[in-house]
Image (cartoon, rainbow, N blue to C red):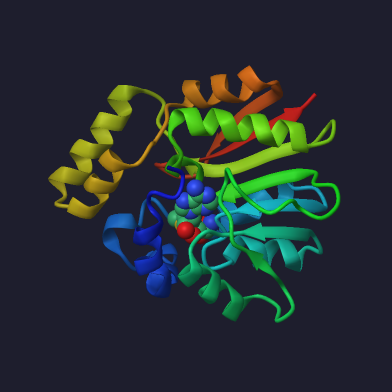
Length: 214
Ligand SMILES: C[S@@+](CC[C@H](N)C(=O)[O-])C[C@H]1O[C@@H](n2cnc3c(N)ncnc32)[C@H](O)[C@@H]1O
C-alpha cells in the first residue's frame, strides 16, 4: 500500500515535466496554474520543510530558491534521478514515502506535498496525519496541494465529462486512485487535532489544503 502507484510514476518520470507544462490535453486542467499552486505552497511554508513525493523536484527547487531548508522524500528511483538533474549537486533526495521515511534532521515546521496525498487510501491518509501532528511543533503546519471533490456528484460529473471528451487515461486515473471529498479531508485533519483547516481551490481539480497544530 502507499507505494502501489510507483510503477506508473517510474514510467512517467522522463516526460512528467511536459505534462505539468500543459502539453497533454487530458491532464491540462489538472495542471492548470501549476506554477502558482507551487508558489502558494512556498508562501505558506515555514523555514524547515519536509516534502513528500517531490517528483522531478519543481516544488523543491522553489522552496530552495526561497532559502527554505528542505528534507526531500521520493519513492521512485526514476523520479529521484530526474530531480537530481535539476536540484543543486549536493542536495539529497531520500528514498521514502508518506508513511515510511528517514527521520528528518532537526525540527520540521511544515510538511508539504503537491499531487501526492490522493495516492493513499483513506485509512493511510489518517495514519500519516497522525504521524505528522506528532512530528510538528505547536504552530507547525501541513500544506498539501491535491485533487479533491466537493461532492460525490461533482466527482461522478468529472468522470462523465472526461469520458465524453474521450480522455480514457484520465478517466482510469480518476477511478483508480483515492480522490477524497473535501469533507472527508477536513474530518481526517480535525480528527487527529489539526485546527484552522482551510481549503483554497486552485483549478477545476486541485485545492490547497492547510491545517495547523494547535
Ligand atoms: C503526480 S507526481 C507529483 C510530483 C511533484 N510533487 C509535483 O507536484 O509535480 C506524484 C509523485 O508522488 C510520488 N508518490 C507516489 N506514491 C507516493 C507515496 N505513497 N508517498 C510519497 N510519494 C509518493 C510519485 O513517485 C511521484 O513522484
